[in-house]
Figure 1 (spheres, rainbow, N blue to C red):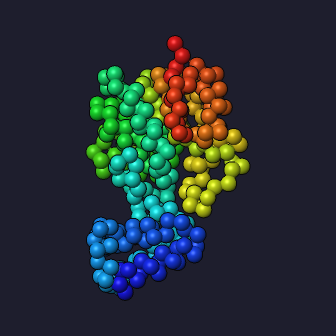
Figure 2 (cartoon, one colour):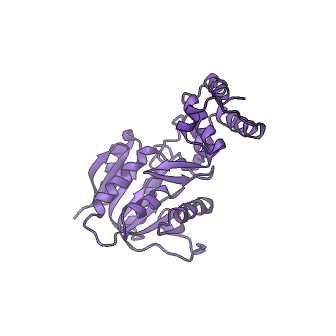
Length: 279
């Protein structure tokens, strides 16, 4: 079968299943299967696909037809200019979260060796991106799920980023952490892209394939933020700044919660809010 024939048929099939990015997805699957870039594929529509490649493509097409995220099918995804390994154990990195890194870079400009904690790290995309973008930083990544920490550690090694992974319930380290590591008591900033979707909200078909405990944050979406602020107030970790991600409709409530714990809203960028400890 020719490339252009498979591309047309596969795109039509995905569109019939309601996949809006059908043609782009099919091109990505072709790139992976043939190890060729987009320009080569488009310049050689007559190239023939052999049977093993067709079987591989069709298997991926079946998965995508159920709206399984492309990142899971491909095994990787882009975030802040870097390619990250992704498994069904972790959320797919989202572009909305990139504002956290941009704001963190600004906060770190006048700090020598800033200490950064990424809470609920998942794939490690925030922790690794911060470590790469802020040379000399001391970066810690926590997660309650050991499978997530393993993915994060693989991504840190993949990018040669210095990140310490710690098994913890938000900021509360487990004594049996496999690295025997503990979080520092003082940090310059905490990055917190925690589960923030209210449990009553509907999610799309793609998100239904992702770990639900990493999406939903209780009745109003702020359950884990309350837990984190309580831990901070109890002295678990003292941080000068907090960078959070939440639905824009939750921002006012999150700002009020932060203020209760002596953090003032300084800046908002898309889904992201920057809070600083009150003087």
